[in-house]
Image 1 (cartoon, rainbow, N blue to C red):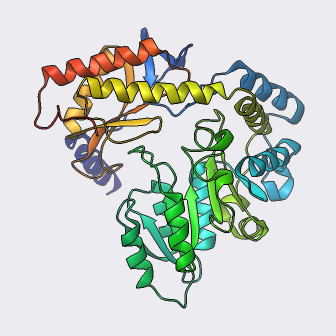
Image 2 (image 1 turned 60 degrees about the horizontal axis):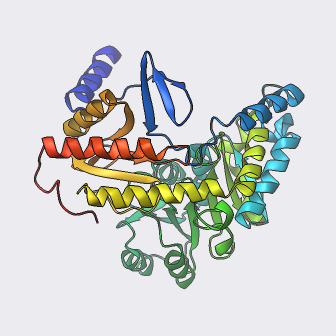
Length: 397
């Protein structure tokens, strides 16, 4: 019974051009990767500041492993909460302007654990339609009554909030930077709506921490107090180049997660060397602000040149720069052609994005060279010219 069921599902995945495939790679310098004998420039990952392969982080990780061991050996609440974990939580709280922070092993676990705790007991959850899968899954896991408002439509959110019950707590959840579109939430408006309807606001700032805000503090960071954004989630495996995640907030939030979040209580703490590497990344984030400056220059240059070339990139001022192609087969074709030209890019299809909105997703990094960026833009312009499609040559938004 099981074998034909799974075979049927896999065959359907292939027929719909939704087959996912891993690529085994080895890193080189300047965001270059080796795929067997072929060299590719990585425009698919989220290493926005070029820290993932920085030798200083690798050395910090190695020193941490030598001092504290390769693994933590237990959960945080047993015997796995080691000195580097404690120091990292204090640094992350300081970065984001929060009283405290709590480490999780992954961003997915941070969102599942937080929503499992906050969504219990009849809480009403309101989510942006384009929120990350971990936020949607977390709300479902909590069993809370959930509604989804139109993407960045805060009047729609206000309507939903106004029709909700005053007898149950309300939680509004949004990405800070939306991972597939690259646009950002309006935190000020969200905070205003939440305060008007006595709701808590939870922001997942996975793609903002390290990149946006004062000193890389993110979309929320020090600009918004805990009373405006009581729940702040961030990840460590993107701009900070290591692994893991955190939730930042006040004592009430962190104590509640420590006591009740199953994704925190029942998992082994991250390896201490990883925490040491992240601490080193925070040092570099503070001492080398030019990394963020270079990244900002790359984004501006990309947008200007894409407009000059007539490429209809989606509106985004972040390192995430999507090109909407619509059709999954077409996205796969462009992705293969770009790989033949030496570029690794994200081919994003349903269910990650809605049907008809398949896209190439380019991500920029401070480690990219201007030469590589220009070469990719020229390759895209050549593809667009050789394969005309209705609306493809519309002006950049």
